[in-house]
Length: 145
Image (tube, rainbow, N blue to C red; front, top):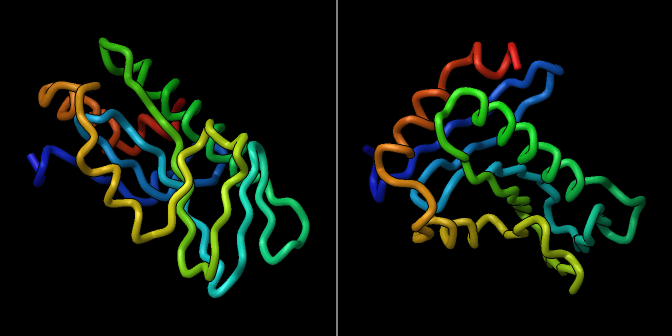
């Protein structure tokens, strides 16, 4: 088991040709981590979209929710228990990050805040973490679901 009982997978391919940037699997459940690099930008995040430097809306929050739903479905087919999956959207290199008061379906972080996911516990046992990790690390699971 990794330190603190957490496992991480990177660039998990999806059947549609896209990928999930990172999966964090641990006692606090599974987190789909969608990373966005916007060096020195001002970012505002709402319930379904984000704006970078006041520009056109980008569907980052909606995409993060969709990734979590996809992961929940895939892991649910291969594990014999309900797998809690939560979306997280992580902004890298931004100058400022503002979250709308109504944005509560996706966890929003700057890269330095991601460590706050580490101490979460109480949703999966150590055996369940290992089962989810065993399933999730097999490429075929993601490309046939």
